[in-house]
Picture 1 (cartoon, one colour):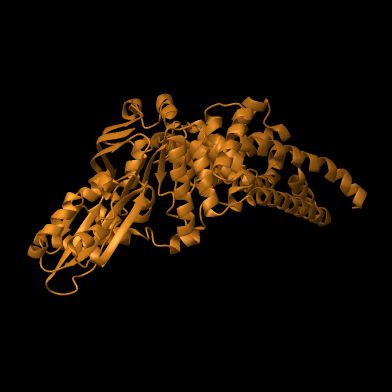
Picture 2: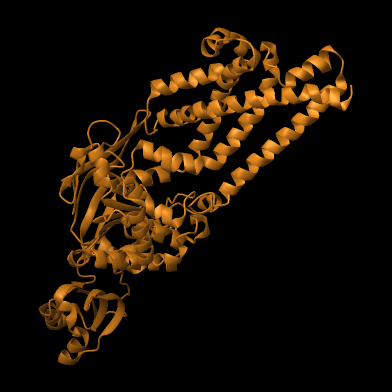
Length: 245
Length: 348
């Protein structure tokens, strides 16, 4: 197979993959961000503590996460048809891709948001801020570097999932690699696709890391370094009072 | 300005109950700096968090500037609109500063104003004015990570003042700072207290903090306030632990046949140079064994331990002279019951 023959096959599938992954990443972020934040807010001791909601959401996330993607895609067939009007093609693939990625991203958001120092939340409460203010002005901006890293991870995972979208006739690079590399023994095309994916994923990871770091250099935390806090006795001058009491 | 009555806070976790506050009655007057001191676990943190209801008290009431906050709190765990509005009129500074690392210094100071819904122009005018007040006008565009601890706390103070509060709560504001920075932050709090008429309630475990800026103080132990009052009231209270910690005096009698006196200076009486008058009037040699005296607003406040020759019986007249000057005199070694307290002072 010559390079030009390969390229005529590759080009449309590149766009197919970009289309599916692009849309499903956007939907995953739009759905996973609020879900992840809600998981943190409703947990015990959270701002909107609600054990029932927290348990139900957590369970839904776990079930979705535990399902292999290819099975999830089949299981969602009728739902996909009700959303997009069809259960085959690239638009149909976006639905299970997004639904598979929402809980994945939500768990990453949950971890990132939980890292935000509780003292900042308390500070905004002491200024009279409500929960929405705390989410908008504290939790999201303070967790932003981690959130960007999480979005990058989700995007990369979706590129992997999208290889299975060929099963529902959505095409894409992964599908091309399976059809030519596995079914027709055209291994050279398969290796070209592997190389393209390796380069694309490296670039995405690099861009994501760069963006996260650029936001992070403004400083990780406002308090003293955690190591120092561990080394220091909790209340050093308490001994002064001890003598008096 | 701040009054709590019967404030009780009980934490329940896994069936265990911990009483952090056990019926605390606190009264902070308008325009004063009030220090609550105690060891860790004494309940100071719970107390200051109950004042703006970051912690819901189990029972008891809190009122700030005549407004009963506990009545505003409602039944749910979340703060309603009324309580949030009341909180915005109470500034708070924290031990670990709690500045948002994603915002510049100026944006941090503007945050309370954003919550109050002020316009962008007004916010930046106010923020720059406050940064100027705390001496950080040139750092407006810096990020908190680029500042030193003392500078961060100045930003924290500027932020706390953004909503023009009448009351400032300080939760161990200087405990993460070195001694020199601590002094400058305390000086700033003192200046703000004087310039703006700000009422300051601070909690600390450092006696020096109370000593350097507080008008009044309270000592907390196991969730209760064991002593409280203005610094001179505390000094006037025989056996006050706070007073002896604030003004520790030590020194033993240099031999038998000596009278050791603790002289407490407080209030209006302390303007005369009494010790030299005593010496001249009765022609006696006085040795000073120890002293802890500050001059506050032209008045001397503190304690001095002096030694007079001869036994107590021989010194009734000089002691009477000192008492006539309005000084409080405690004879060391006379009252057995008091001695341990004084010995402990000596140990300090």
